[in-house]
Image (cartoon, rainbow, N blue to C red; front, side):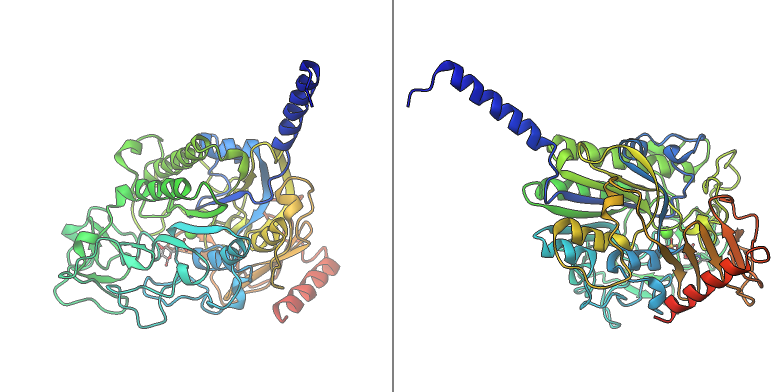
Length: 502
Ligand code: NG6
Ligand code: CA
C-alpha cells in the first residue's frame, strides 16, 4: 500500500505522542539506589531545616521527591538498623543485633529473605558498596582467606565493604569476600580481646596518635588514629581514611556503569558523618563546623557525583533513589574533633529530642527521601514509615512474594501517591524499645538504665517512669502525658506488650 504524505505525517505524530506518553509511564523494573548515611541527623540536611550548612545534592533529592517528615530507622545505632533494613525483621527480635565488634560473625541467617534477595528474585543484579557492620564469617574467620558468609551470602551479587565501622579494625576493604591488597607474606590478624605482642596502641603509645581519643578508641593505631580492637599485619592493605569516600564513590560509579543495561539494586552505604571524621583535604574547612560539618559536605558531594553518573548513563528516569541514615546524630562519639566546640548554631537533630543511642525521636527519626525523576511528584509527606518497610514495599513494586515479616507495604507512600504509612511501629533494639502509634509514642519505664549516656552527653530516653508523648503537638517530647492520658497510656502499653510477645 502506498502511504500518502498526510498519512505518514499522522503516523509520525502518533508515534511521537505515544512515545512521549510512554516516557511518563512507570517503568516496571526501575533501578534502585539506596543511599544510606551513617549517623546523619534529622537536622543535618538543609532541606530538613539546617541553616548553618548547605547540602545541595541531598536537597535536590529531598525537594524533587517525597521528603518524609516521619521516616524512621529501626534503631538508634547502626547494626540493628541495618539488620532491620535488610531483613524486614524488627532488630529487637534478634539478641545479636546490637553494635558489633569487627570480629563478630554474620548475624543475618543466610536462609532468610532479605531486601537484596527480593530484588534478585525479580531479576535484579544486586550490589553493596560501603559500610556493612552486620558481622562476617561463622565464628572461625581467617581474614586472609575467604571472608564468608557475608553480604554475598545474603543476597548481594557484588560487595565491597568495610567490615564494621571506620573506628573499628580491620581497617581494610573487603571485595567479594577477599581483603583488598592483602599480601601473602604479611597476613592480617584481628582480635577484640587482647593485643598482639609488641604492637603499639593508643594507650601504650599516645605519642603516635594524631586524633586524640575522648573515650574508648585506644587500641591499634592506624594512620595516627587509635581504633577499637587489635590488629596486626596486613599493612599494605590498610585504607587511607581521607580516601574512603572517594574509594567507595568510585566503586559505586563503576557498579552503575557495569550494570546499566540490566535492572540493578545498589546499596551505597556511606561512612560519613560517623567518626573518625576524616574529610579528604578537598573538603577540609568547607564548613565552620570542623570535620563533622566537612564530612557532611563530602558526603553531599559524593551523592551529587553518583547522581551525575546516573545522568550521564541516561538512567535517571529509570532509577528510584532512596536516601536515609542509619541512626541519629552524635557530636563527640569518642574522639576530640571539635564537633562540639565548633557546632555554633547548627542543630544536628533539628527540633527532635535525644540523638544517637536514644529512644527519643532524634535516635531514629532520620532524613528519609524517595526520588524518581518524572515519576514521583515532589511533596512533603507526614506518613510514618520505617526502613524495615522497604522489603515488603519493593516486593509489591516488583510483583514478587514477600515473607510475612514486620515489614509493611508502604509503597504508595514511598511513591508519593498516598500519605498512608504504618499504623504502629516498635522502635529500638533488644535492650530497649518504644512504641509509636498514630501521633503518640510510649516509652516503657527503664528504671535500671541511666537517663543520660554520659560520655556522649545524650539523653537515652530511659526513665524510672513510663513516658507518653503526643508528637503532633509536642515534637520535642517535653510533656510527659502519662498522668493526663491514662487511657491512651493503657492502650499503647497493651499493644506494645502484645507485639513484643508476638
Ligand atoms: C560505640 C563506640 C562509638 C561508635 C559506636 C558505633 C566506644 C566508646 N564507642 O561502641 O564510637 O563506634 O559504637 O556506631 O567505643 S554505629 O553508628 O556504628 O552504631
Ligand atoms: Ca550509625
